[in-house]
Amino acid sequence: SLHGVFANTMLSSVSCRFHSVMTKEEEDAEKERVAGLSDFQKEIELRGLDREIALLNMKRGINTGELYTFRGKFKALARDYGFPFMAWYWTVWTSTAILTYFAIEIGNVDALALIAKVDGWTGLRISTYIDPTVGTIGLVLAINELIEPLRLPLVIVTTKPVVNALGLGPKYY
Image (cartoon, rainbow, N blue to C red; front, side, top):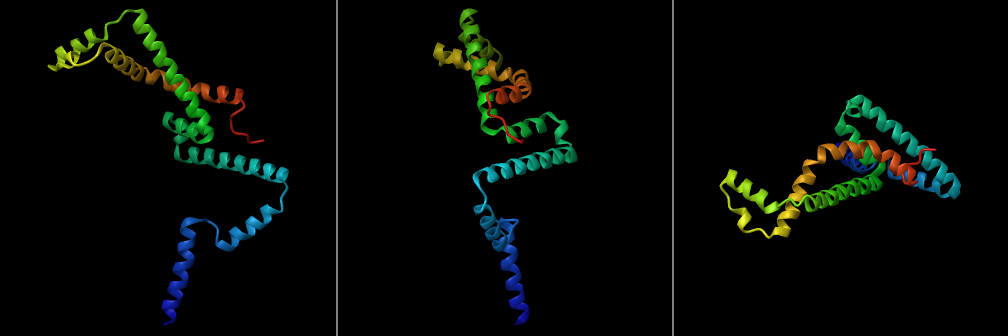
C-alpha cells in the first residue's frame, strides 16, 4: 500500500539521521567543498570551528550550571585539553607518590606497624601476611589517595598555564 511505502521511506531517511546530523547528500557536498580548499584554508576553517565549539561548550556550561561547579570545570579541562591534561594529572599524581615514598623512607615510618595497628582495630591479621616492601607501597598508595582533595584543585588551577606554556593547549585563533 502507499502508506507502507511512505512509512518505509520515512524510516530509512530517519534512521540515517540517527547517526549523523547530515544527510548522505549533505555529507557528500561538504566533502566536495572541503576537497577544494587549500591546506591553509582548511587550517583557518578548523580553527574557526574549534572556536565556535568552545563557545558553544561554554554556553552549554552556563545553561546547565556546570561551568560553576568543580566537577564541571574538571570535565571542561578534560574535554578541552584531553591528553595533555591527563599527562599533567598523572605527572602530578606520580610526583606526589614519589614524594610520599621518600617521606616515609626518610621519616623511617614502619608500614607494618601501622598495618598491625589497623589490624588491632579491625580484628584482622593482614600484617602477618604482608611483605614489608609491599606494606610500604600500600601505605604510599593509601596516603597518595588521601592527598587527592589537595592534588586535584592544584591540577585544575595549573593545567592551563602548564599545558599552554608547553605549546600543547587548544588553539582558537
